[in-house]
Length: 226
Ligand code: CA
Image 1 (cartoon, helix red, strand yellow):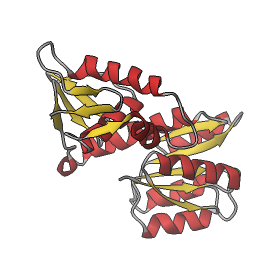
Image 2 (tube, protein in one colour):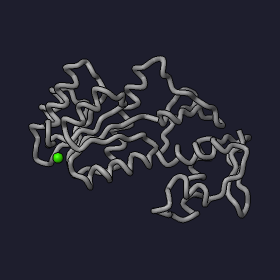
Image 3 (cartoon, helix red, strand yellow):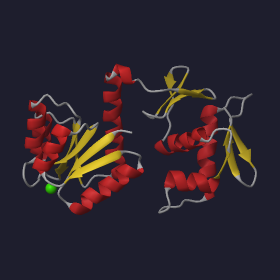
Image 4 (cartoon, protein in one colour):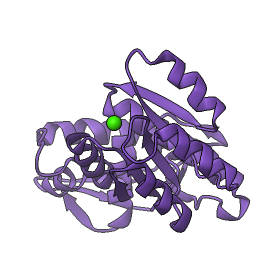
């Protein structure tokens, strides 16, 4: 799983980001000072850094500049404050890959993280994503990509998660509750009906007229047949 370093001095923001990224399956490391974050970047290997601009010890800009000066090209997303328009330009000039402006939506941040990770994964040729065939789709769970006849198929993050869970348990029955716990977690519980709706959408993408891969097990849940 990709490793992400978060450098942020606001504790609530740091914890919120860490928990959400861990929930998404990322491995997370944190620092709450700029100089500490820079040291971690020098010694550790990360796939991406979320870097606040206003930090004690060393500013996010300086962390960015010094990191690039050391030929370290770890992708950096700057967390800038609202109204600091100049920061964005300066940040990108200093070598940041992207920025989000606080307050940002988690969904937007996650999307940007995925775009950058996918871009870097494509650059590393030796690290090409593993594809599996499910029905009429070729799916890469590592980079959230689904193809049908080499054409990309739009799938939401939740659809990938549900399909991944079914895939890991292929040939076995999984209950709706299992899917709810695994994909949505315990805190936020949509209804079993929500799962059914997602399954319908997945079936439309996976199944063909003469082959059904997601089988309904009445009264219990579903089974993926490869
Ligand atoms: Ca700050």
